[in-house]
Image (cartoon, rainbow, N blue to C red; front, side, top):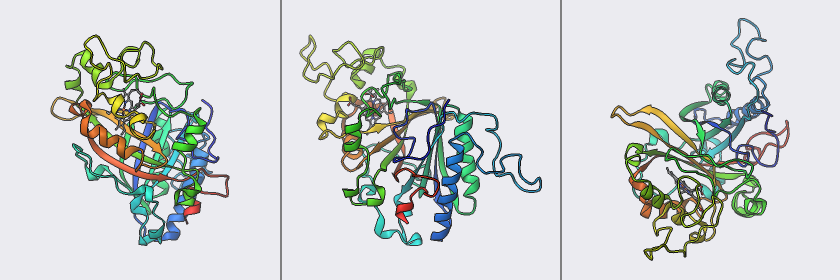
Length: 373
Ligand code: HEM
């Protein structure tokens, strides 16, 4: 597949039509030296510009350098195309500390998320000073990119946690068919999409006037690893599954309607006089009309990390959502889901991340986060 352009006003990997595979990695910065951090970001940017175009991470490559030196590319993507690779960087709140002279520059939008009812977060797979979202149509390409960034970062960053995703659970363009999550439902129908330019300006991209001018053209990222108890879900009747989501399983149509993209009708009631889409259906609780029109650009992936030793699949949704201000978007939506969503009987949030993803890199003289430093 064609390479996705690396340079531009916004980082690729946000509105880019969601690729099939994910390797998401959070890093901790291990140096205390601001100049070393800036150097790392410059080196990462240069490598990302090459990798996303299907090239090797360094100019010598896997086999072109001196035989006595470690190669500047690890080699497992030799011969593979760019495969739609995008690399998207984000800065966590913990980066904005005295080590790097960044204490005054923490965006208000990175305010710690509140504790949500029912969540069971594992700090070892949450947070991070930096994150890189690597998406591609080929998992080998996505993993290769992260591996090479980690190699370049040796001595300056250490991998804190990482997550592989094997299938997209969202569409971010009207050109894409809606995929299914591991509950078997179409996911991403009512998502913010590439084509919604006015809504993207309003709901997705940070602007100069939002308080942190260096973020203009960037977006804020929330990640949540959501474990599903799918064995329990699989014993739930079809009718109940559909009530819980608020859409039918076959078409993905809102209950009471016929086709996937039909409008949700919260006023419609069924023969029993009850609303077709119940009061606590997921799509009602999450709907913009109950949250001051707040929207998210969801870009999550299915995961199965083997089994958990108790005869259950360690599976779920690695939820990824981009937005202009989590305080007005993710937080209120997740609060109402955490309080009332019947889906909570079948899911558990086990990790959380919140990152400021800076604007795009303009050209070879620019680098990720330049306006921050
Ligand atoms: C819609 C599943 C977690 C926000 C949907 C839909 C499904 C779904 C099947 C309907 C299709 C669509 O419009 O995309 C799930 C599952 C989850 C989960 C299985 C957990 C494992 C979340 C979380 C949030 C969220 C954590 C945000 C805090 C939304 C929103 C919509 C949606 C905003 C669109 C509602 C609308 O405007 O119609 N979800 N979801 N979901 N979900 Fe989730």
